[in-house]
Structures are given as structure tokens and as C-alpha cells.
Image (cartoon, rainbow over the protein chains, first blue to last red):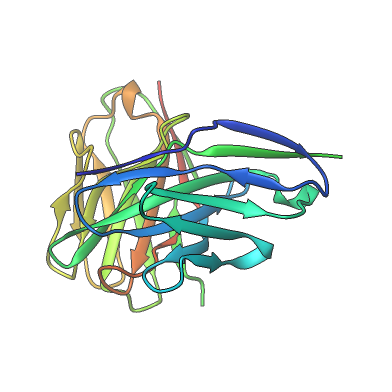
Length: 115
Length: 112
């Protein structure tokens, strides 16, 4: 079994400031990790993913995340946010069940960028 | 290339009514999924289909049934809707296990 904890349900930040959205996971096996973004009234789209290799992963829209195995974390960062980054962000971890991968999602973090 | 499409976008049901949510993907993906999204709970997996002809239960399958009609289509049926099934439902697909999942725009369902 696996689980994901997003420590902050809401993060307000001023435009052009840096932001970090925190994600911790638990799993008894090796994992793949994902960050998805959901804009209002839309489906989810992939921001970035960690499968293997370099622990620093770069994604779309200037976001990046770092996989830290010892701390079981996968925090999302952006050095300078824009109003258009206002959205809900979900961290997810994958497991295996047969040939299909099941994603377990965190409860989400609402990022609000203030002018 | 429309990706993952879902119909309807909105639906209001009365308790006890039935309905089917439709999902189709045009990416030739093998695996398809149904999730529900509730405030403060993220997305929870209802059912998934690893490949055409197979379906399996996810975290919250009670009150739902699914059909993988062919490789493109995966439907979710509520036989007797309950207010607890008020939610936003998302369909997703992936090429195979371990691949990125692509999501549809969602169906907002209200059960009165």
C-alpha cells in the first residue's frame, strides 16, 4: 500500500515570489512520482514526473521537483510565480497491479498567486 | 486528436436513478481509469481496465459498474444513484502500466 501527504492545503504567494509545495509519500517498494496541475473547471495535466535517474526533475511552466529518497519527499518548486500559476496541484505516487499502474493522489494544494 | 473525451459534462440525478458516463480516447492507449474527485480528498480510483477485455476494482468501487466496450471506450454506470455519489468524475488513459495518465475534462454529477 502507498500513500501521499500534501502538507499544505492552501498556499498564497505574491507574484514573482518563489514557491514550494510539499509532498511526502510512503511506500514499501520503489515508486514513480508525479505532479499534476488542475486549472479551474478542467481535467488534470502532467507537470513533471520522476521515474529514475537524476533526482532533480524539470517540468513545464518553469516548475521543478526534487526526489529525496531518504526523506521520502518530492517537493515542487518554482523560483518566480505568475498569476497564471493559480491552480490546484496534486502529487501522486504509482504502484503496480498487474500490468496497470494505479496512481495514489494526495489531497491537493491550492496555489493562489496574488498581484 | 481530441485526447480523452467525456460525456456528459454536467448531470443532475434524483436518488435511485441510473446513468452511464461515457469516456473515449483516441491515443490507442491500452489502459483506462475512472476516478472521482471530492473536495479535500484528491482523486480516488473507482475502477480501471489494464487492457481491452479486463476490468478491476480500485479504491472505491461500491455502487459502480464499468464496461470496457473496446480499446477506445470505457464507461462507468451508476445503477441506483445516491447523494454520496455527488462528485466530479474523471476518466484517464495511459499507454501501459507505468506511463503517464492523460485525463479527460470531467463530468460534474449531482445526486439530489
